[in-house]
Amino acid sequence: MALCTCGAAFAQLPVIRFVRNPDPAPEFKLTGIDGRPLSLADSRGKVILLNFWATWCRPCREEIPDLIALQIHYKGKLQIIGLVVDDDDEAFIRKVAEGDGINYPIALSPTEVRVAYGGITALPTVFLIDTEGRVVQKHVGLFNPALFETEIRALLDLPIAARVETFEDTGGVFLKHADRATALPGVDLGKLSAGQRQAALHKLNAEACTCGCKFTLAQCRIYDPACQLSQRRANEILDEVSAAGKEEKLETQSDAPGDAVAEPRKP
Image (cartoon, rainbow, N blue to C red; front, side, top):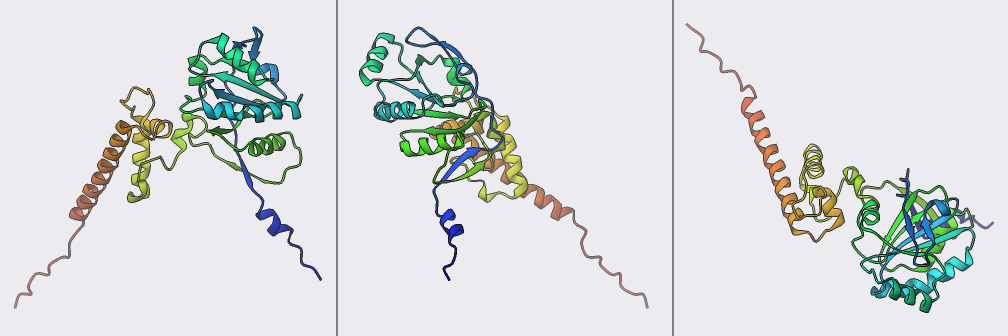
């Protein structure tokens, strides 16, 4: 008799991950390069792929044909929106859009929109928004279009050859959730006790970075792992917390009662 291997086959499927208890996508009201108003509300009920890109960004340009194909294939169910970063020459942007045959709306991304989405540190950056208007995933850099399509199909309740898992956003999607993180880039919390780690993370989330980013140290470590100022200050905080723990341990030991010394018995 043949054995059922359904469970084993399921375990071998690729995994896609969505945010557990996702945040609403920050709304915006812009004017597209075609002169039409553009907002997320216009596409409510559809899956939205919000793509921050630039005309000078080679990976951004390379993924355009795949985005065009996705928009065609899932017409009426998917809305791709391109927000252009660090480029204000609308005439040139329009020329690029026409030359590449872009079939989805494009607008210039003002600073406040980029800030609302946690800051855009690299291009392309894609936010995947579900049919209820919630951000369920963020991708930075050039990704396999098959991943985007699998995620889109999953959000549309269409069949997929993948497993869906959920995760808690600890700042990777929205920086405001950095206070949930138990690990930070370039910060070795492993040498601290559980209590010390909690104290260090509290300090890292309470103290502002001095690099000019206007973020906390924890947020800066996530936003810009290459920042030397937040790296140095984070290591100083770890040393401070570790030293405080050693001093507290020594004080506890010195305050501990010693063995009583018996008085000699009188004859």
